[in-house]
Image 1: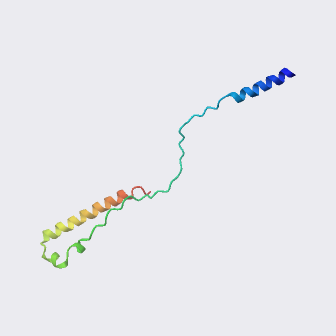
Image 2: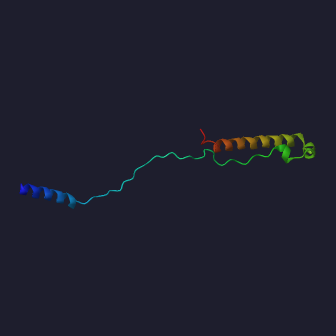
Image 3: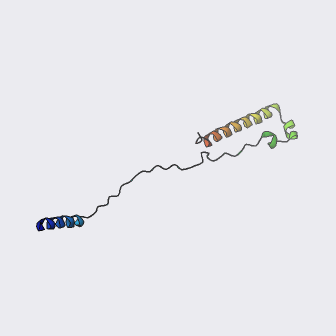
Length: 91
């Protein structure tokens, strides 16, 4: 009986003598984060009627007016493309 108690005590003490080993490892945790979907909004285009007064418009030739209107249409298309790109994150 006494040898059994000594053996048990030896086993218990042997368990205390072991060292705990810590291992560092990377764990990925996915947490939802609120973020704005809209990117940087492009600057607004200035309308042609706000750029040129009525007197200047009347003084222009037909070709000049057509060129200004085409430039305005192109500027609005580019603005629309930039706005679409800025809002691409919103779905």
